[in-house]
Image (cartoon, rainbow, N blue to C red; front, side, top):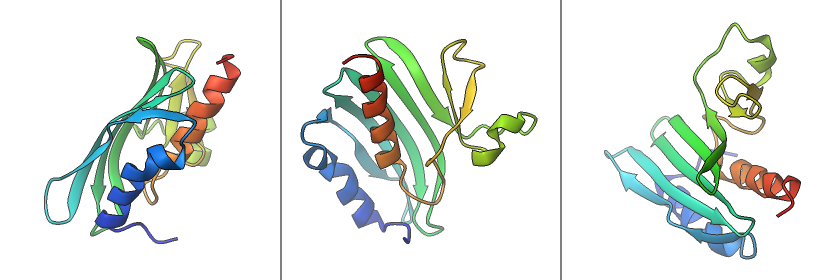
Length: 141
C-alpha cells in the first residue's frame, strides 16, 4: 500500500473518532503544514478505557515517510509506555524492528521491546490505537 497523500493522511486522522466510535472518547490530533511537502501531526487521543495517547510525528510526503516520531501512552498522569526510533544497535533483542521500539515497566526508561507494526513507511496510528486498546483490556478497564 503506498504512503498516503497529505489529504489522505489528514482524512485518516480526522476520521479516527468515527472509525473507533466506541473506543475513542475524544481526539484533538491535527496535521500542521511546515512546508509544501512536510507536516507535523500533534495531539492526543483519549480512549474510553482511560488511556491517553500523545502523538508527535514529522511527515515528509515527498519522500513518503515519517521522518521522526514520539508516541506516549498515559494512564492518568502516569506514563506507562512510549515509542521512539532512537537506535540501540547493541541491543540484539530490538533488531527485528530496528530502530523502532517501545519502553514500558518494569524500569520504563531502560526496558525496551521491539515495536511490531511501527515503521517510517506507513501510518502508525492504527497499530498504536490497537496497542492502547489491548493495554486497557490487560489492565482491567
